[in-house]
Length: 238
Image 1 (tube, rainbow, N blue to C red):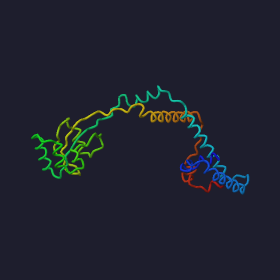
Image 2: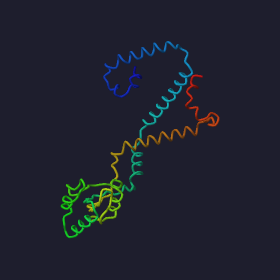
Image 3: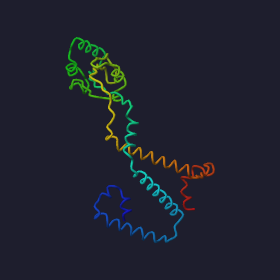
Image 4: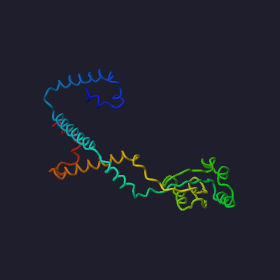
């Protein structure tokens, strides 16, 4: 009954045992009655299926045991350092923009800004983009988050600078770069579970390779059997 319950879809496994007990018991009774029709002689298909299930369960148990082996703090720290100690995490940019329909309108806005006009007020008055009411502020963003022409302009700008008109599919942009910052590496606690999973995966792959080197593996040449054999289910009953 335990195995049947464990094999149920999650939404059923979460039901109280009181709701599951009778149904599981009845399922086992029906299976036993039907199995008795076959008797004790297993067909080739049953034998092969049981052999495959046994192999799968033992392999799964081996993976669980390897995964359960303690990963030392030194290993975790070393893996974290290898990932992030000297890694260039890239830059983030804080920019604002004013979106207008024509290049001429963008040039006129740049002239106003050079004459001392306030960027925020111009964005509120003239920008056709959704950020206009907020003064054109886009907040912080990294590479790949903006369309290529916009990004290409931003990465070449100095802090506080105003761009030349930038054309995208949305229209013409006047961009102000407010600030930049280097992206910080995540804290160890944020990626700890990910690192442990990677170390476990590496340990399992290493164990498999070690076993492979020690084993004698006989492969039947593909040309002798043909790749189509894996779909010939009728062979199970021969």
